[in-house]
Length: 455
Ligand SMILES: *Cc1c(COP(=O)(O)O)cnc(C)c1O
View 1 (cartoon, rainbow, N blue to C red):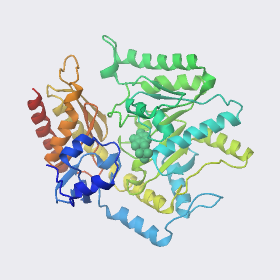
View 2: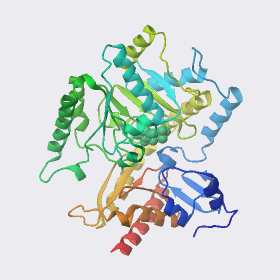
View 3: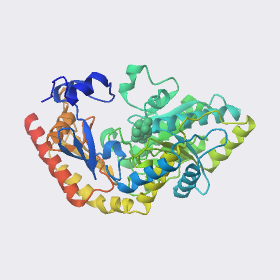
View 4: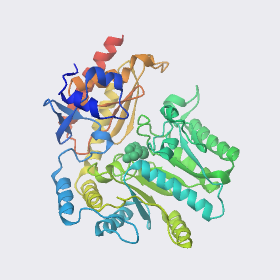
C-alpha cells in the first residue's frame, strides 16, 4: 500500500522528517498521508484523495481548512505589521485589542492575559507564575502541581509532567512534585454498586486526602480540563467541579481550567467551565483561539491571580518570562477574527444546532455490541470499543482495535482519531448536516467491518 519508490511523497516524508505521536510500524506499512489543501472540513492529499477530517485537524481547525475571512485577516495584518514582540513595554495594537476581547469573553469582570505560542507553553507559564507567587508571598515550598490521570496538558518538560499518561515514562517524567489524581470517569472507574454521586464524593475525598498527606502548603495549583480531550473525551462525573472546588478553596489552592480544547465554543458555551458551571482562578487557552490559523496560546488570569502577580512583579520590577513571539500581531489579528466568527459569525450557534444530531449519531453507534460507551459534550465525542459490553472488558491491546478502525475509516475517506480503545470525533464548527451524516455513515461501515474481522 505504501509507495516506496525513492521519489514518492511517502519516501521523501520518511527520509527527512522525524514525527511525533505517530505509530511508526503502521506508517511504514500504510504510508504517510501528505496533504496539500483543504475545503471546509475536508482535506486532500498529494494523490488527490479526499478525506472528511472529523477531528478538525487536532481539535482546532474549527472554521474549516479554507475560510476566506480567516485568511484575509492574516493577509491584512501581514501587509500592515508582520511581526513584533511584547517585551520592554512594547506591544502591537492588535495585542491590546485581543486582550480586551479575551477579557470581554472571559468569565471575569477584570482579567489579564499573557501570550505564548502553544498550549504547552501556556501551562508552563502558569506553573512558573504559581511558583513565582509562592516564593514572593513567603511560601516557597508551594510548588507541587495536582492534575488527573488521563489529563493532557502538553509536552514540554513541565506540561508533560502534568499530563497523566504512561507514555511520558520514556522520558523519566513526571518530574518530582507532579501528582496525578484519579480520572473522574464514572463508567470506567466507578466501583460496583457505587452511584455517580458517591463516585464524585470519592473523587473529592481523594483530593482532600492527597492535599492533607502532601501538606496544603506544598501545593501550588490544581489543573483540570473541563472535559478531558486527548485522554479520550472524558466528561467529568456529575457534580465533580462543584465537589472539588470547595476543597481547593479551603486550602487556598488555585483551580486552573485548561480550556485548550473546550475553550471558544467546543462544548456549546464559550468555555467548558461555563458548561460545567464553575469559575476557575485562571484559564489556559490555545487551539481554537486562532481556529488553528496561527500557533498561539494564552493564560487568562482571573482578578485575584492577576492582582497578586502584578503586585509581586512590581516588587522585583518585572515578571522575568516571555517568548519572542508572545502576542504576535498576526496571531492576535487572526485570533480576533476567529473569536468574531465563533461568537457573531454563527459558529457557536452551529455547534449548538448540530449537537443533538451528533449525540444521536453517537448513541446510535453505541447500540453496537462492541461499543461500551458513547460519551461527550457539545461537538466532542468518543466511542469506547469493548470486547464484552456487560463486563466492560477491553479488547486485547495487541489487536490495536481503535487503530484498525481509524485505518479502515481512512480507507473510506474519513479521518478520525484512535485514543486508547476509543474513537474520538470533534468535527469542525462549520460542519453541515449532510457532512455529519457522511461522517457517521463512514464510521459505521468501518466499525462493523473491524468488529466482524475480530469476532
Ligand atoms: C493540545 C493541548 C495542550 C497542548 O497544546 P500544544 O499547543 O500542543 O502545546 C494543552 N492542554 C490541552 C487540554 C490540550 O488539548
